[in-house]
Length: 181
Image (cartoon, helix red, strand yellow):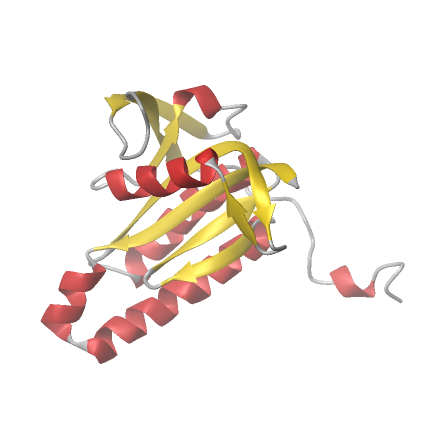
């Protein structure tokens, strides 16, 4: 089944060098803190962590604006906790094959992964052609065209910055509302 989704790949930039310099225990503490923040922000923004990828993860969103807000919230909240490491991410939107019920295959998935790899020094990259609408408080700044492995030509991308508006959702009593009572 092909489904429309926004895919996000997130990576802790510099994790391998940090592990070599400070040891496995220190790296494990940062990774544990990072995963805790990822889970919290994903829950708040309504996106799903599809899989953990060592010091990163793949996230899937039905609504592109939720994915964008997730990335920017995650970056802001992980800055202090994960220092000196930084978060980098790549986002792409499109149809993908839902494979065996729990994985996705498709060009948008691959593009998000490649953009994350390319995002050294830039927190979040997204193809210009994939932007549907930016959440309020978010800006897109042109980075220009980039060559991504596996794609036939250059792709015009933007860097996403800003602070998305907070969600006005009360999830504290979610499980006590009808029909869950």
